[in-house]
Image (cartoon, rainbow over all chains, first blue to last red; front, side):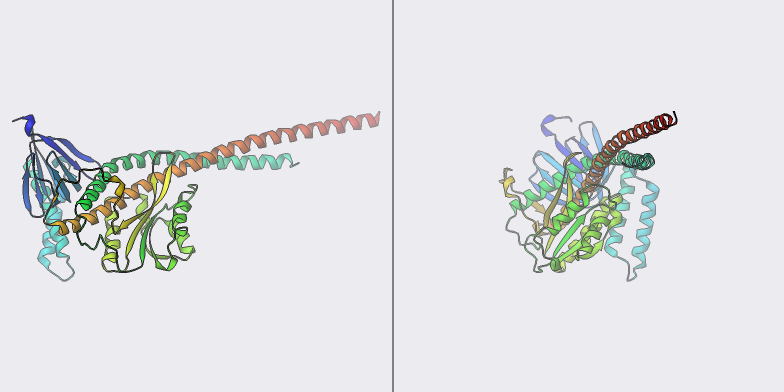
Length: 137
Length: 284
C-alpha cells in the first residue's frame, strides 16, 4: 500500500489556516461537474469545487473532511485545494447542520417569490455534506 | 517664571495623560499580536490564490472575458480600508492621502469605505461615498469580505464602474507598514514574475470561461480579506508606535517640569531666606 512512487503532495488551504498538508496516494472530491478521484500524474487541471466530502487516501488509511466552495489546482506532483470553508468531522456541529437542512428544505418547499432558490439549494447541499461527513466517521 | 503651583498642576496633568497612553500602548500591543497571527495564517491562502490566478491568466491570455478587459464606464471604484478609531499616528491620513494625491478626478470616484476615519476624511473633501461598512473592521471575517466583493462586482458587471481599486495599509512587519493602492479589475499581470514554467498546459473544468467566472470573484474576495486582516494588524502596529512615542514624550516633559519645579522651589526658599535676613538686619 505505502508505495513511495505513488504518493503525491496534497494541500488544503482555507483563508484562516492551512487545513491539511501531507502525502496521499489518492484524493477524492466533489467538483461542480461531479465527483472525481485523482492519482499521481494527473493532467494539469483547474476545477471548481462543489460542497462535498474530501477523502484523502493516505498511506496509513483514509481521512475525511467536508469542503464547501473554492477551487482545486491539480498538477502531476501536487494537488492544492483552495477552499473557503473546510472542516474535519469532529469540528462539525451535527445539530446545527440538521437545523440548517430543515430550514433549507422548508424554504425550497415554500417556493414563494422571495425565496432565493440558488442560495437555499447551496445551503441544503452544505448541510447534507456536513451530515454525510459526520456519518462517514 | 511660572509659579510652583502652576508647574505642579501641569506635571500631574501630563502624568495622567501618560498613564492613558501607556495603557493604550499595552492594549494595542496585545491586539497587534493577535492580528499579526491572523495575518500570518491568512498569508498562504492569499499567496496561493495570487499564484494560481496569475499563472492561470498567463496561460489563457487570449480569453475574452469581461473581468479581463477595460470596462466601458469611466467611473472608478475604490475600496478604502482605514480604522474606526484615531490616535494611530499617520495611519489613516496616509491611506486618505493615497487617494487625494492620486490623479483620480473627484467626480469619477465611488468610494466603498471600510472604517470611519477614512470615510469622514474623504466625505469632508467632497468625494462620493457609495457605501460604508465600517463595522467590519472591528473583526473582519471572510463572509464580510465576500459581501463587499459581491457588491463591487455587481456594480462592475452592471457597467456602473469600469475599474476597481483597493487602498489599504500593507503590513510588512511590526514597525513598518506601507499604504498601498492596487488595481484589482480589470486584472493586470505582473510581467516581472514570468519565471514559472508556462509550458505546462492547464485544463479547466467546466471550461475556461466558467472557471474564470468562479475563480476571479474568489480571488478578489481573498484580496479583500487579506487586505482587511493586514489593515487591522497595521492599525494596531501604528497605534502602538504612536502611543509609545507619546509615552516617551510625556516622560521627557515630566522630567523637564520636575527640574523646573525644583528650581522654583529652591528659588522661593532662597527668596524667603533673603527676606528674613534682610528683615533681621533692619531691626538690629
